[in-house]
Length: 286
Ligand SMILES: Cc1cc2nc3c(=O)[nH]c(=O)nc-3n(C[C@H](O)[C@H](O)[C@H](O)COP(=O)(O)OP(=O)(O)OC[C@H]3O[C@@H](n4cnc5c(N)ncnc54)[C@H](O)[C@@H]3O)c2cc1C
Image (cartoon, rainbow, N blue to C red; front, side):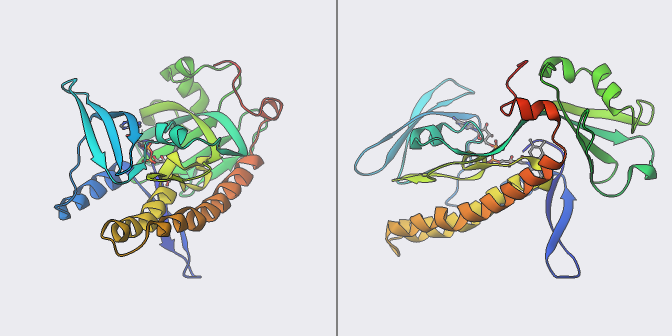
């Protein structure tokens, strides 16, 4: 999850959740610490999975410890590919993901305000500027984010240069009012994998679905995936249920995730620039 803001539920007058910004880095630390409650879980970082091979009893993950270069094999009855947008487990499962109509390149900038600027607003704003769409996100504390659409001829390396970033932020904030925390370019996509399961291989998170971030629901959807899948896997592994139970994971999660992506695409569509309509895959210039 890129540093910045994530959104989860704050209850409004209907009792339903609306937006509540929090820094995803803190959420990540919290989740990681929470795993310490479970002696059965071991967390290993900087291990790259290189291949997964199936036999009659399970899967063998071939991987490399990136600290030492040592190659190893890990046995598993099931493998959940939470390996992000470029998931190799998704490629292994095979099918082409469903495209849901949004594929654009955007610059994401986080700044820390040096002093309060109340005019920026304590809410998020979508700027439907036909020359260049943008989103303003009110972060936590003094952090503010702008997500700014890139034109086809604007390359990532050039657009993250501080002088380019400050020029783009000029309508809202200047270098003496704020400190640049980070600037990065992303491809905002709208995809749903098909299927999410093949035998002992499953997908979760961005490996299974990607949404433009306009609703702040990408990571939230991944957490919902895991909430749906974890107890089912536990029951199957303990022999309390047949592994057909795992088929209900995709049938329950995929329609929900599609609704959210469709809504985010509609919201993003409000801000679409004419040039991207002519180049829906936004590949030119990169
Ligand atoms: C600009 C922007 C703003 C966003 N805002 C929000 C928001 O407000 N709210 C929200 O809920 N979501 C938001 N998201 C979406 C959110 O960032 C993603 O949905 C989330 O990070 C996906 O988590 P993930 O764990 O599935 O994938 P990732 O975060 O991509 O993590 C995948 C991990 O797998 C590892 N990996 C990949 N391949 C291998 C391999 N072969 N071996 C070992 N490890 C591997 C990667 O190194 C990485 O650590 C935003 C995204 C963007 C780009």
